[in-house]
Image (tube, rainbow, N blue to C red):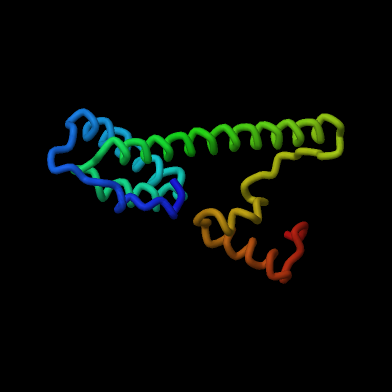
Length: 138
């Protein structure tokens, strides 16, 4: 659903259809879980859809289905893109243009930005990154 969609302009019934309410609540609940945990770009749409959870109309359910179709579309694009990227990297490795080597944890300078380290490793990597010691020095 795009941000220009105006759910407030949709009519609201005094007695909503219970089947539509159940279907909408189930779909919005699942989409909300996905928005919170994996796809943050859905949060605006989900915030709009949850406002009408108890007085939902078939039009609101249609908007929820649009969000679901969007999610399915981005999932396919991400898999296609990741698949192409992995194949490209594998071809570079197989051709010998990229040489993959194991790097022991004690030498993973990038860990300083990704996890909590013991003080000794933290100081070692800080010195390396700031240029006080060279990577090969002991």
